[in-house]
Image 1: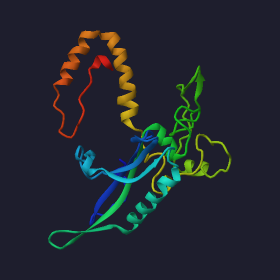
Image 2: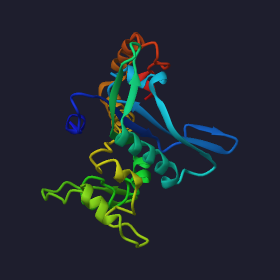
Image 3: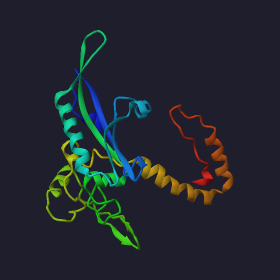
Image 4: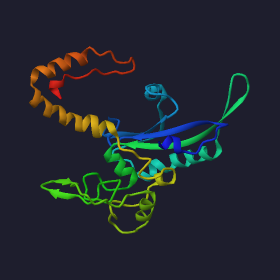
Length: 246
């Protein structure tokens, strides 16, 4: 939906950038860690888009501490804005030139990185929802967001901009301060939640443990045999784990 709504020129081709970053370092070496900012091009179809040869590294931070948000993002965003404003001209084999519009579609982070780069409170805070102003409730050591028939105020781009301008040493409804991302993205619409961690690695893993107790060992063993016979694409370097170890 966001891709279709972005400005476009029918007489020009598009290069649409998707930014990626993780809250955990990619590599740990000699007490230092590497945090990369990567990017892919939306016009490259899946799964080719995620091949190693198609993934670009826009920036990286190597240190013993987590990367400061502004230090890592500002130079990347300045260069992206320059590309958006100037376009890209590519020369083809026949000598003709093709003009490309550069656009930034979204930035995908896991929850810790999303909070860090958006300069917002973490997902487990009382104001941890990045989409609306629902208030969390503490039950024991956990923060829960109970069901309510009331429609909470949405957190749109203007909400993020307004609440990021304060100078207080505390968050305002979950917003701790400004972020460079607001100059190239509409928050929070263009920072979607990461499905891998939230669904496949988190919720599905919990469901598998629940289903294992419900259906018994034999069904899971049959499922593991089925998955072990699945032929994965050549660029996928892993194999499915046994469901009983989930």
